Image (cartoon, rainbow, N blue to C red):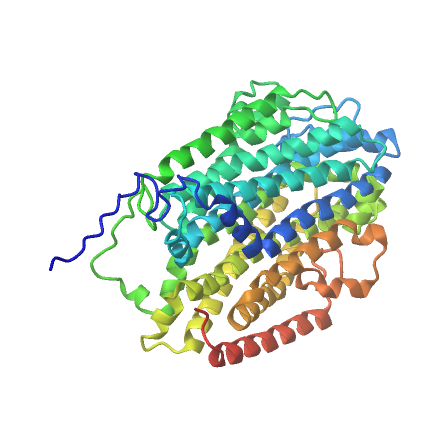
Length: 560
């Protein structure tokens, strides 16, 4: 008696087995619903945080533009090379108003924020899902080969469009801003987010890990920022701005929103988004799941001695990120040099900005530079702190991927693994902050317009930031190692510190309100007295968090 033979037709190329009847997008809507449900907290935070922080901040501009002198003093800053690097080419400077200020001073940073959101979200929903093995489980069902990528792009695209819409509608509450330009402002932000979502999608096809994909996409974003900065600086100085036309960030500035709106640069950004999205779509079916199109370079046959310890492994995995975040802080500090000489006149004509910095415009240039330096040191500390959270956050990703269990199968105690991560990342953060502070110290020390006592005071300001960085390591460790599903809360002090710095003095918040964030608990400005009690308190709370993190990590079950 012969055995029955079950002959099945093989699925078409580019379609997962089990999805042959549904085409390449089989299961698309189910994947969209699943992605929204799985990432709902992350999506809600992005769509609320960006407009929630920016739209109220526009209200602080009203007092700045009460006098024509104050407005033109602000325009003079934007006409400098530093202003063009951190703002744009400076449209509408001859008659500077709130609309021109929003376009020149906020649009670039909103575009960078939404671009980063697009990159992170699409890589998380594609390459990160492959790393954890969840996408392989999903692919065992009736799911098309390109459906996960399409779902990730759809969810991310909807997210950045919602952010742009919220920004546009939020700006409409200010009667000084034209309603049509407000909608255009939101559309420009959304389209820029779409463009870099495509960049993230393509990077996810090329790289074999989420970390590498994020690095590739971040490099593209960095090059786009650099090209725009070079072109805008050249335009301010009367030279050709051709470099700006090679960057999606430059195209956004060239719309001249709130000044002389023109729509055609938006079409360039849409074409950029379509090109990168199409490239990712075509490449998605040309690689094996779990691998990238760029071949991974094989390592040496024997690991160096430094990699035989947890600390060496952590340093190997985090050093490139340190160079990125720490280098960003250093570049920001160095770029502030040209603005120092004009700081006095700027703050004298902008009482709201002086109030935000906590300085008296009549106190002299040295006092104003010291107050301004407090903000620069705060931003630098937050950049380095972002490095801390992202790198300690790899503990959570490794745990979900099963790498932590594999490491602990060796003769490595849990406390040693966690301690190695804390010490390595903490020392790296202190090193990065010190280098950034040294760069800013050199800029101020070589400026002949400020007194000789300002630079040493700035060095002391950098030292004041060290307790905040230690507390950042402690909080990230406590949440990531103790309660990994709550690790995203490590970012909460960042948002609060930014809001407190931006509008705290303007709104007259009570002094105790600064203690809700480790970055604002200890005053960083050199023109303020050092307070021992908050610094000791921050370090004491950090010690408790370190202890609780180790106790919790040693006793809880690992996540599967």
